[in-house]
Length: 330
Image (tube, rainbow, N blue to C red):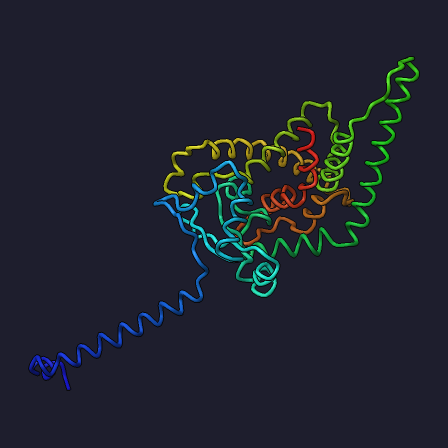
């Protein structure tokens, strides 16, 4: 029956067909909604317009305590809306296993943020870059050529032993000088600073061959820049949750990030230039030397080799231990 014939039917004949069609459509729609409801984790109540659940995390309690209470109410998996972003919150071993082992590929990427863009060389740091061709390539280079067990055993072990011996010798010399000067006071060593100096020297000697002397002004500037880098990369930025307000930079974080990124890049450029000048020596002293010989002026997925090398050497995963030690000194 064509459309003209259907329209020519009297209303009493068409009405039952129309009613059956509407009933079928409503039942199918409700069925799909029920299926989606079963698959979708529960959403926490109390979302406000525009900002979502951000107001719940602005109280006096730390965020992990607030999220723990929400988990007690909604279960081991639920969702929040942080600004424009829908966020999945999980707690418990089984949920973590499902996300990071069973369904790890679905969660392999990293959300883009202002900090990752500005401080991470436009998402070039492997710890900040989204899952894709670039991430897989740099991860392979780091794992196979730079951070292999053999290279770490040869390079890192020697550096650690050297720095511990140097620190112990400096402590002994400090005590000996006080004794020779007839000073009756105790030779007190601040252990937080002592361990912190060892950690940062091990990490930077391993990565860029740089040894720090805590009394030098340049080294203090580098330490402060590294601290600022980690503080800013882990800080809350309004522009991440409300992207349409990014141009205002309401909290001033983007301005601070650009300033810190510029300082950090200046240090990295100096180290990279020095390594390039010494490249013809044929000896690989640190991770930057190894990356130079591995990348060999090749662009990786549109990213130039210099940026890849600097980003990989400054990756937070490489200097995290140094940062922890620096927190103790601040």
